[in-house]
Image 1 (cartoon, rainbow, N blue to C red):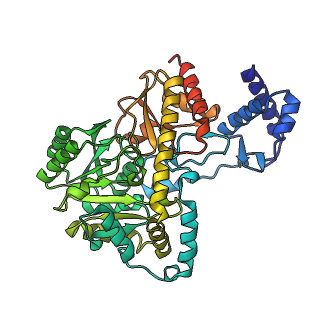
Image 2 (image 1 turned 30 degrees about the horizontal axis):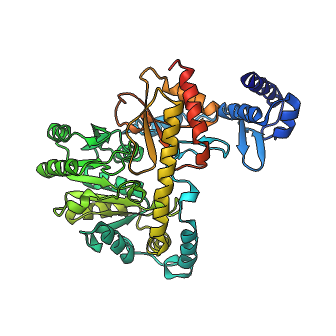
Image 3 (image 1 turned 135 degrees about the horizontal axis):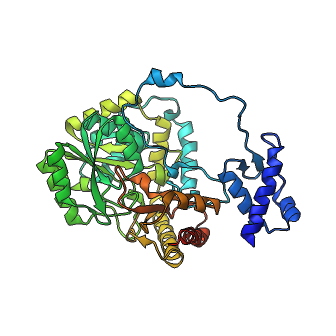
Length: 462
């Protein structure tokens, strides 16, 4: 009955919209409830359907409006094709993880933690102090504030402050490392699946991607060795701790074997420690802490754990590798905002920082377990690829017969946004996956989100 009512509301509103001006405000939910004798839930479902079709747009706290689309005359940008020529490398599309969605949607797609998992009080106080200090009006050194360099080095252990280069977020760090250590046209080995941003950075740097399959416990060192031998690659990008998207954490013996392979080939391991602050059942021990010969280039970001507004990351590298990375960074941006560096340093050196991280660990554990239990109950045809000991995501294998595009559409029409697993593979995916983030807003709706995913799969007979 609810589906029939929703369809009737959608049809009625489409007729109303056809005669309305672009930007016109739709009747309120209360008015639609009275007009169609439907529940508020049914009305909201109809509005979400229209939004998914691109007909209306929701403005939280204001209302729903007819989307303003200019259709009188299409602009002709065809001349740009000849001017630009063929793209040197095909760029991945923007990830679903970066989408901003209305507040009434169940958001299981995001790449960032919810606001309640951030040290908001510490961040606001740090901004206030930094605004009164010299960093608000001074140019910082190219490699970063010395105090922040020292903090990154001390966190890793066997590193000197002079080994550190500070970046405006890990994405910039990856781009600089790929350009500086690999270079356009040269091979770079990647785990498959791997971080979407690394695939994008590789494409932008023009490197040639060499995928190596990686499972719930990491890559096969023998496959990695074969990839090095076959391609002559001199760098391997990996996430040994709580990989994004899979949540995999390498056993210590696997880390030793991978380091052995990298050293044997005179290569670099670019270690992305993105989830250092998000351990749940295990603390992070970077592979870089066991390397004293300069083979591991270590990247750690503070953007997700401190604040999306504080895009600060550090790379630790030694010798000529560090100089190449620094030169590559300066070619893109001369330095990182001293104000943001001062804020990041202030937050992570406050006594409340460690207390905050302990609280985040407990909250992430509860959220992870809630979403995992909901998936087991409502999506029996799916399989969790292990329960991660840290990070922010669950990696879910769906039946091979799943139509992923249809699943994404059906979930969104029902008010759930999920992240398709295909975005995380540098080559053809071997199956159908979803990456579901358990650090997003309103964990109380996780069971509803799982139920809707299950219903969408059931609609495909799965």
